[in-house]
Image 1 (cartoon, rainbow, N blue to C red):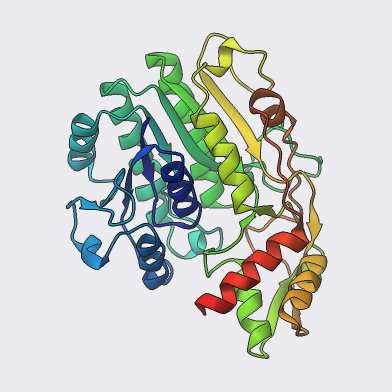
Image 2 (image 1 turned 90 degrees about the vertical axis):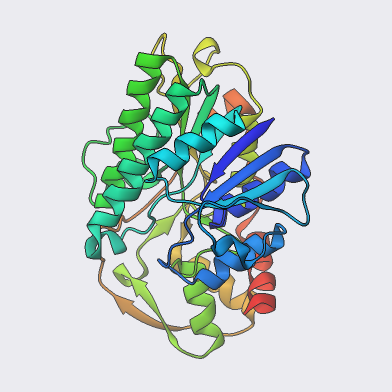
Length: 345
């Protein structure tokens, strides 16, 4: 199978590309390698896949020195003409769109970046799928679409009409746009609402690396809402396994006894993808302390704008339709993360 992975220098994209290649697929990865966070980490991920710093050259495909079935192109999703050319040349079977401007708090500082990447870029992906007869588009949504819902666990049938960050609003917009294209053009689309993914090679703006850095260097860690937060922390390998199960599924979900919030007769579906087992933030920090062998200095702070109190995914639909089964405990996951953290940093 030939698969396009956008955001392939990103955290989840990097892990997905590696797993797809190890399974014998042909993969084209694209990423704009923006400076939202340390670009050296992105280049280090690419290096693990056999891609050199030549990838700094825009729109030039670089063949992996490690995997014969992989090549990488530096490209913006907003570059409609280049994106269309890529689709026309490569004749992809499936698309996995993980590229997006990430970060809830950053959306308060730079809202235009979210519209450009997450709305305009996604629109270009949909149009390229439409005109190139793509079999299946899998795309990243987010648990943030649920806002500050008090109902737990969160299910795909819950209302998502009250986003509390622009990031969340763009992800909900992606779901609506995908539904429109599924309805009008019979494109199979599958949206995945990710729940707090962590693991080796993770983003440095997220809690695990922020905590590990601070604890290792004897600096205080910021604990928002005085630690009264819960997250459905999900190890990246479990996430990738779920994505690959969906990519490998050739049957449109609307023809199955699916349990997602699909629409009858339209090849459109949404799934939660998480661990289904929320962890208190203070318990997460304690597990991190144990793995690092050092106590944290905690700076308790109030709730931040755009944050949510708790995330807890109902993943039964993904289990029933695709056999998804997250297996990694928080102790094992943090242990693997800390091992990588010590080697890399």
